[in-house]
Image (cartoon, rainbow, N blue to C red; front, side, top):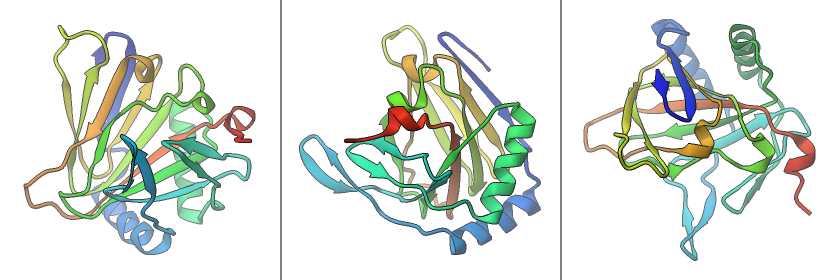
Length: 197
């Protein structure tokens, strides 16, 4: 998909429906899910989803007042990392897993523009489970319409170039009945830049 000020493309059937379903079951049970506390507008709140951070030992990640030390790769996550790296010819050293339990779970407007990701990060986002919408809007250009992308099970969405500098994205709540969804966002953290004193 062609976007001004960024790169965005999707591989709709990176995983088969059966493989995506099996992986959803495996990761729902196997990952060390947590509900993080974030500071928003001066108040501490629980994230409206469950999260888990895995990666290489030095891939420490800081965002929204959180400092996450990675858990070691599971066999399933390591296999996915290798498959995605081979497909995209990119290197990743970490993955943020988000579990949306139902339509009330969501991700607010944000950009993945932390210094530890570098100026033009490649973020590979794999979807498992029920379809949810990813919505993007440009930070400064009101003349550009928002972009709405359904993220179906097994699809791989890649965000690259200056997309995180110029666009924000979210996974909005929905009143439509939906089952669980896991989103795996593979990233390359720069360890030196990621250190927190």
